[in-house]
Amino acid sequence: MVEETEKTAENMISEIRIDQILKLLPHRYPFLLVDRLKEVIPGESGIGIKNVTMNEPFFQGHFPENPVMPGVLQIEAMAQTAGIIVLQSFPEEERSGNGVYFMTVDEVKFRKPILPGDVIEFHVKKEQAVRNVFKFRGEAKVDGKLVSQAIFSAMIFKKS
Image 1 (cartoon, rainbow, N blue to C red):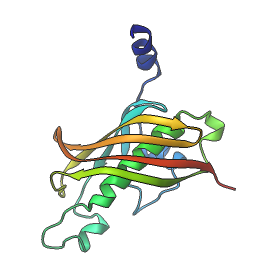
Image 2 (cartoon, rainbow, N blue to C red):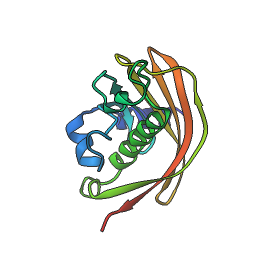
Image 3 (cartoon, rainbow, N blue to C red):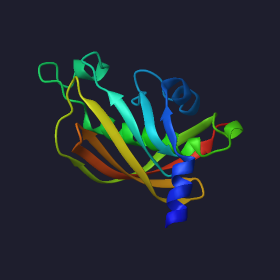
Image 4 (tube, one colour):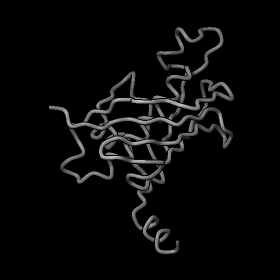
């Protein structure tokens, strides 16, 4: 166990900023839902950060007088965090030009609304990987409190 812990700490990336995220993911505004990552262990786990502002386009319709971040976008942000973590484990020359497709979303729970001004931390951890299919467990937290969670899988593929 000690060897594994040392290896993990050695491989940890303290921060992945937006300029690097844009090189890894095909998503762009308004659908890029992760601002940065921290404590990334490539291919294994990490924490995605989203600063929620009143200027988010989804608040115009969800709901104008009581703005709440849609649950499906919380799950999408978890998946984007997981995608960055997986792609960061690829050799540098293979990190760009990839696509990601959702395959499953299970055991989803929404516990508290996410509001303008919140800073969300998406804690994701790989549970399984078989070839190019990855299964992750994700938890969204605001101020250290669990607001949503899910288990999800996705396939990563090389775009032609």
